[in-house]
Length: 430
Image 1 (cartoon, helix red, strand yellow):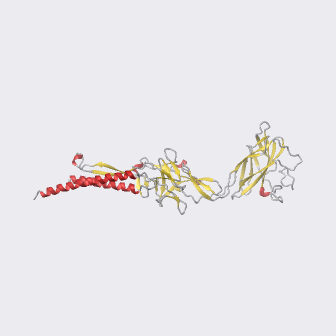
Image 2 (cartoon, rainbow, N blue to C red):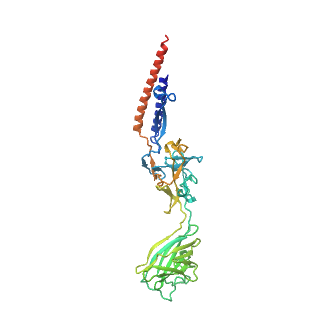
Image 3 (cartoon, helix red, strand yellow):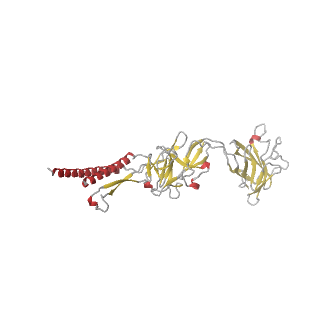
């Protein structure tokens, strides 16, 4: 009977081995799947009894979660793979948290990124004030959504306008009508002119006309108008119904650098150092830095003309960097950070609890979940437009299958021998 019991344990162990091989083979094409391994351990029939007295074998499943699968490129930006240590944090429809390497994420009907197993990708909503660099915990995680992030209008509040004003230019006649006399019927005299676009509270664009007038050596008047305020019969240029700013720029005679700007009396704007401040029509108070402007013996040149703010724009796509930053891309060409996609891991990956859909849960043996930014603190990097292949090697699995089958057959022969011995014993009576 001991002989037969040992053989039965062997057949059960080989059956478990074949079951695990079958699990691996069936998941040979499952994204992010990690092969399982069968471990055998000796069993004896009593404590302190030599293994030679029988008992058999016990087979157990051992996960190989730390293995890295090969990474293959795809044409979908939201297909993600982890190169190195870490798992994507996902949730089911009930909000329960899991870990997975299956990064085949696509937007569902609501725009939430969900993988092929039905798990939602979780991240920190940067636009709502969350960021993985400051939290590093499961708190604050939300579903990553890629279609409900239309860009809101942002008013202009700051900007830089740097030009070179020709030092060789003649100063205007003292009797000339200057741009500061903006309401005069005609005849304004100025030296140079440029324009810059700003945005009001509703995202409407306003073209600002900026005039530079050399009034004396190393001194230039600067006047700012909203092009829409032109009352000219041609619809552009002087005269204007109102002025946004009027001031005086001073330059060094030694090197041509700007030394400061002062606001002219009666102007509605203000100045500080090398910056001017004025109210954008139906918008915010905007500060324009003129400090990089120069007065050199060369032609008038606009070196920098940049302002913040934007018109409302629709979402055209997303991009995901190796550190997990998901940027929204808008139809006007601008981008903004939308989500930080963190990675997570545990102290003992192979002891994670497996659940349906190639996902895992932490437990006491695996250790608690640690969250971090991709590419930092030992975490791997995230590859966009990529998926991690299964770690199953079919040639190895088929070889193991032959070995398991042979072992099963051998154990069955031992069982048959034990049965034959019983028959001999039973026949001794007769």
